[in-house]
Structures are given as C-alpha cells and as structure tokens.
Length: 174
Image 1 (cartoon, rainbow, N blue to C red):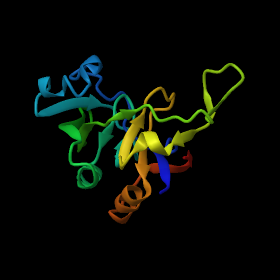
Image 2: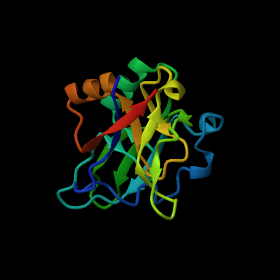
Image 3: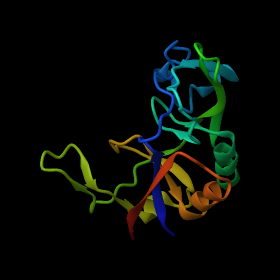
Image 4: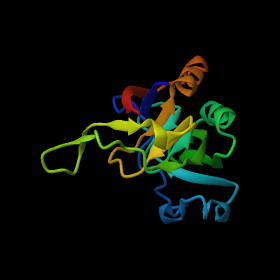
C-alpha cells in the first residue's frame, strides 16, 4: 500500500496568526490533555484578501475540515478531535475546523537519508512493519509539520473535494 505526505499548499493565501488570542495552550495538545479543552474553541486569526480556508492546516497545530475529519474517523475510529472556529475579527470571516490529535509513529526506516549536518531529512523512507494498519498519522521526529495518509484515505479525501493540500509519495521498505 502506498503512503503520502499530506500538507498545506503554501502558495495559497490561507489564514495566518492562527490562535493569536492564545485560546489554546499548545503545550496541552496531547491525547492525555485533550479532554481538558472545551468542546468548541474560538481562535482568532488573520485572513488575507482573496484568501481561502484549505481542508488541512498544519501549523501551529493540525486542523482538519469537517469532510477530512469525518473521512479520517471512517478509517480510524479512535482519532481524537475538538471543534475549532477560526475567526478573523476585522472581516468577520470564519470557518469550522477540528483540532485533531493523531498517533505519532516512530516509523522512519534506517534507510531515511539526512543532509550533511544531519538535522534535516532529505529522503524519507518509512518502515512498513512500524506503521501496521494506520490510515493517517504523524511521524515522530520528522522536521516537517505534515501528516501521512494511506492511499485509500488520500483517495477518499480527494473524492470528497479536498482543496489547498499537497501530496508527496513516500518510499516504504519492508
């Protein structure tokens, strides 16, 4: 089965300064602490002119649109999430997202290649045995803020019209 890095298309004009009102303490974002957050959270953001809300926002934390979180739960019912309303105070524009906590798998293969300094991955290779049957997850120790999706999950979000995302196929060994 193929896997893909799923990220935000940085060329799009998307919301920035997300959580500028500090409504969510980033240090609290873990499976153990998610229940301490309210069911719904309002996060101030700035929206550029002619901007749009992509279906996946990777920074400062993972936010999935309704169609993406519903699809993720179809493939992995144990995914934890809380509702978030992104709101641009100046324009009044808002959108609904779901702050999502995915499993962080230590699944990078020994064949993963790093730059000469050793602090940045130049070729990502995942170990199939460490992934098991996960359809969507994050990679522990990976320097890019992206998620990984199995091919069937990726096809499902694309069929549902996911916008503003990038896909990059990942090498798998094992």
